[in-house]
Amino acid sequence: MFCMFGVQLETGKNRFQRMMETHPKQYDYCINKLGCGKVLDYINVPYTEYKEEDVLFDIGEYSG
Picture 1 (tube, helix red, strand yellow):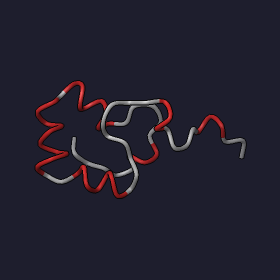
Picture 2: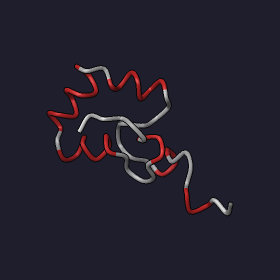
Picture 3: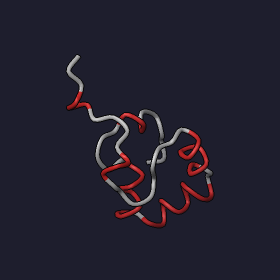
Picture 4: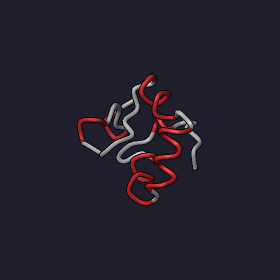
């Protein structure tokens, strides 16, 4: 649940934004007690409420 591997590649709501809605106690523990919020800030991954402008890269836009 608290694994951050590959979170920067997720489109739409990422696992932490979904966890905030579905498991608020675990979210608080992960972000604040374990310090995952600091790591996510450092790698520029949003973990609070979802906003369309937070999407860094949309796989659908890539034309290869």
